[in-house]
Length: 133
Image (cartoon, rainbow, N blue to C red; front, side, top):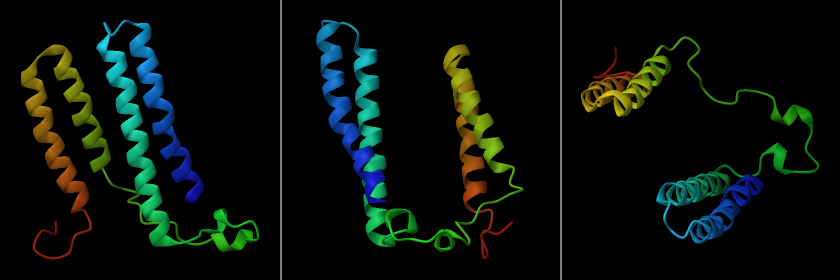
C-alpha cells in the first residue's frame, strides 16, 4: 500500500498550492471554491495517512511485489454483507439530509435521526451478545 499512500499523500502537496492559486486568481472573493479545494487536500491527506498506517500493519501485499504470483492474491478479501439493507437506509438518510438543506432544516433533523439508526444497525448487524438483533 506504499504506492497508494504516496499518491494520496502527495495530493496534499498538490491541492494546497492549487487552492492558494485559486484564491489569488479570484482575489479572495470566492471562498467556496477555496474551501472546497482545501477540503479535498484534507481528504487526500486522511486517506494517505490511513493507507500508510494500514500498509505498515498489514505488510507487503502481492500487488506491492514485482516477483509475486497471481495465486498469492487469491482467497478471501474481506467480509461483506451481501443481503444487508442498512447501506440503502443510510444512503436514503443522507439524501434526505441534502434535501433538507434545500427544502427546510426540519428535514435535516429527521434525516440525521434516521442516519444514526442506520449506522448503528449496520455496525451491529453481525454483533453477538447484548446488542444482537
